[in-house]
Length: 215
Length: 278
Image (cartoon, rainbow over all chains, first blue to last red; front, side):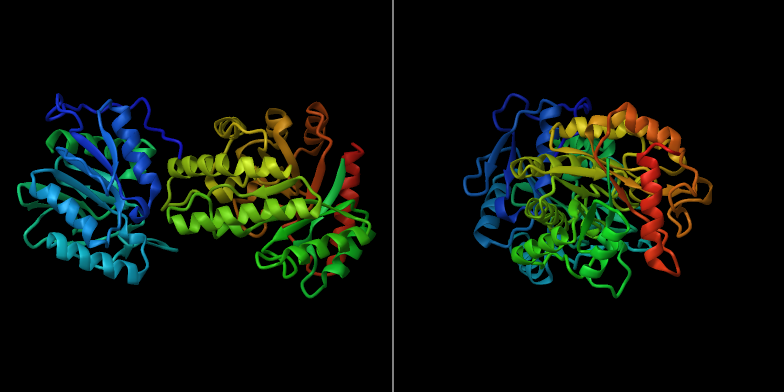
């Protein structure tokens, strides 16, 4: 996909600028539902001159922050690997692409996420019908790390926030959460952000910049 | 220039052969085949059946001018759902394959669809990406992909300069514009589109438009010379850019009675346009 993000810059002060591979862009491979999301994070990181390492889930290097774009993992061994990084102190941005899975695939994903991280996901919601959006506004309201609005991406995974802190809402319903796992932090996004990064959505770029600065 | 008309204009209940007979008798040189829009040409139509379609067209004394489809309204290349997008790509690939089998060198693609749900910048990016991917396939088959300007319905690429930049971003000689002179409505002037995009025009769809009647409603399109297009200017622009290709009639507004008469009337209008007697 053609990135339109070029030219945009976010105010970004890396939390640990001197360390190699402070950021790892983890490609979920066949478990990535939206390839454009990977390209989106790649484009945003490159555009902001943030050093990052791209890696597969099989050999995930240690890093301060790990980004998993449009992931729909149901493989317990892969999730266990992500969990081990969390327990070691990493911050993992787990962007869910599971809204685009079939019902059966989603059930496996939901069970695996619950088992690995104690995260309870609700059934995906289709936000659009032929007569328009099901809510009054097509925006996800983020409350952390900055308050901003980013467009929806047609389908969202509501998240049950017991033991987690809700960080974004759609029509009042939590769709993103932050949760301590071991020494690390899991940031779960129930609405994809990567495709918006790829087309240079200003607020998405700002949110991601703030996330990198905070993580 | 040569004139053609779509097989989706063939009155309902007629066979393909009956339709070809009418198209030939009305004086057309060719026929546009619409993948997915007519019973005889579907995604499930086999290669052997496609070759049989070609044989029937040639037996009728015609050739296939191009392969079009309306399937991209349902399966846009710009969809957010990757499965829908993949189906859109499969449709284009089938168009390319069948165009080659049918002996034509052009297909029509409705490249993207801006909606309330899927915003413009996403549509633009996905379409460029998809067409960059498809262009080498088209080149190998000796086929050009003509992206149609469906301005009002697509809400995408509304001006000729914007369309030109889109083609520049795709940057492949096998991707151009299938220009519809009736689709521009009150947003511009068809002759200016022809001037600006001349060498990149793969085919021209011909119909007239009543510019002041609003958009996308049943009554906005009409027969050639009945609407608000400036046909003298359109014809002059074709000469200016040396367009000598197919004029493909796309009569969206159908006769309620004597449906075959529309084929004759449209052919006569195209003859006058080609002969520059407007």
